[in-house]
Amino acid sequence: MRSTSPEADKLRQAVLIIIDEITMLTKDGLRCIDSLLRDLMNNDKHFGSKVIIIGGDFRQTLPVVPRGLPCDSIEILQQMIVEENLIEAIYSENLNGMEVEQLAKRVILAPTNKKTLEMNRSIISKLQDEPHTF
Image (tube, rainbow, N blue to C red; front, side, top):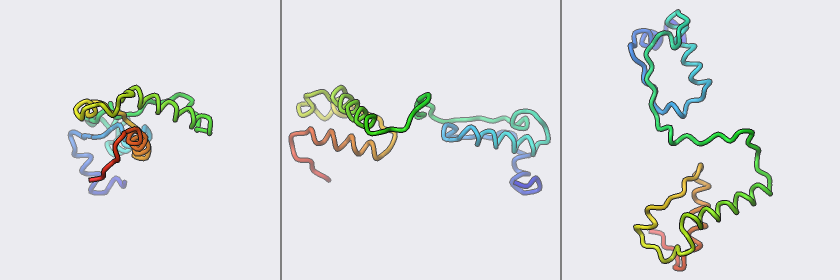
């Protein structure tokens, strides 16, 4: 951004800057905003002395796995076993005998839609009746 641009003038005039969904921003993105505001405000204080309010749901942030490794076939197999145990732990062996209200209170969170679809298919395959799509 050029220091003479209209956007730069708006940032200089701003008293307060709100950043929503901060958990979606990388540390480099936040550093970039800090550097930009320092340059525009021509001072070396954090965020150019602007008041910054950040917001977001930190419960949606996935945990960091230290020294995480890419999956190979053995790890994929282990993951499948863990998922099956998870499904059994959440829905128990009496999945077919559960009422809708009981099922609605049990959820498994997955990091991607693909993983969610895989787990849903696995759970549906355990039901006795034929599935119906509405």
